[in-house]
Length: 266
Length: 246
Image (cartoon, rainbow over all chains, first blue to last red; front, side):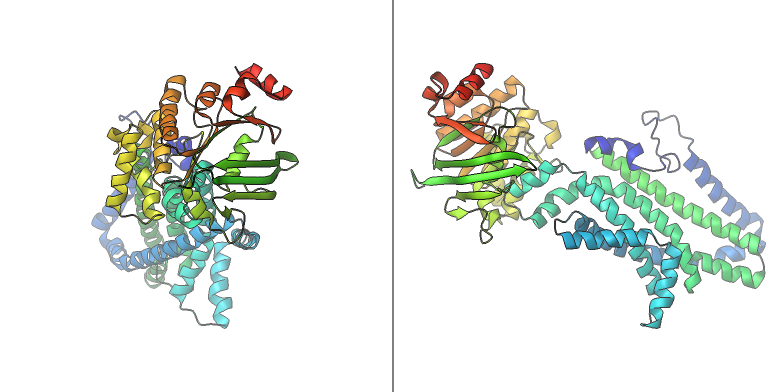
């Protein structure tokens, strides 16, 4: 497990983009990173447009923050729900009980085989015929169900990466399997789980733009509304894209820092 | 503690790994206070037998009684049995995310529901006993392998076990560290702990054992007091094994 943790390449899909100096961890001189260029560029572009091209960018810039708040609301709620679903799924996938195991496996297979956009439509429109779910809630539920399946695989892999002897030692001391999982296995699994979970968080944040079709006023939806009224499509979507970029870059950097901390702690 | 009463009774234990017969009709009694050393070639089933005693392996047929409980009976609380049977592994299996003190405290607090203060008091005494008290605040990766194994022993002792199982506890240690760990085990033996020891250390077996058991191909081939076992083994297979190892 220690090997896996120390190898940033294995844990982190895009080390360069995230600004983790993976290849040359010792060289502090290599400060110029793809992340740095992208982030500085995006912030500078927004600043330039808002200050020097006030019309229409300032109006757009003032209109969008409500959408950012909704995007965060959707993302954070969906992530929290997805974490719970993911943990349960991960545990179920390693369960010795065949029915539990099979149920979780089928869930993962089915969800991974259906595009998120279709799932959103399905939950909103199809289930909407039976019970009336508010747009926001159905968006959060659909995304959580979808991402829960992916997170389940991350939890499963993280738990299985903890050496078998740890569970045996915990059980030998008289701990129940729940106690052993809680006090011995999961705290160790977290180290391998956190970085990929951070990536899922960023991916979910980006995918949350899909909920704009469900009449949820997220960042993209606010952009569409503004553009439709002012006919400034190019300008509005430029600003929307830049804001998404800044937000995701910030979060992927946070993920990178988190991973560095974990590696430094061991 | 009841003397001369059976601490462990194994009746006709059979265990398969796929087609491989890991335990072949093993029957064995161990009294309280007795020190039994199990020797045999790799794959002879000695570790499987030991691991069956606290149900890390579940036997396919036969019975295993610890104290007065059949450990494979669905009505038996296996966690209570495991509290009373401490286990020490070849690979130590100390908890890397916990400090040395927390390693010893954890199960006391989680399983025995001792307060942190009470657990710490017990832990510090045990750490002193295995001579790593000054490491209490460190994380295990800062310890030598010998120290990690002594920590694992302290962790098991914290549950106040009636029986201690040692599964090749020194096999992954260099000679100096082996000596440190054997010294701790010797102390336990002097204190009268019931011990079941799987080992390749023949000198130690001869010194510490009340009884030596030789296993091969999943079966007990021969058992005897160490003086007779090592000087005058009765079975040809035992003789061959001892010739190769001594």
